[in-house]
Length: 79
Image 1 (spheres, rainbow, N blue to C red):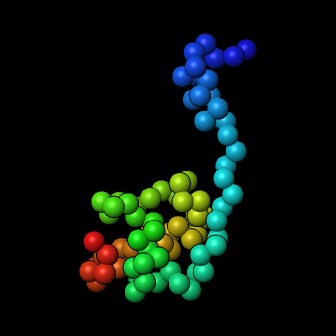
Image 2: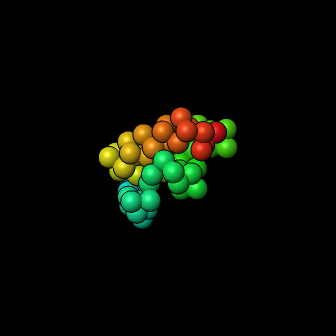
């Protein structure tokens, strides 16, 4: 049985797609609060954090990134 409209069909496909492969291509040693170039990859232009379902990071690494971004903001290295 198929969904009735095209919009419902696209939502159905979006909900049932496979999870993307988790990326661990960023070296853990480089994720430090004194390195704003790498940390800025995980924030939007307005300064919001990008969720891990979009970045593809594993949970432990995303927690580390969030912690380091907050430290970097406290020292005024990131906006």
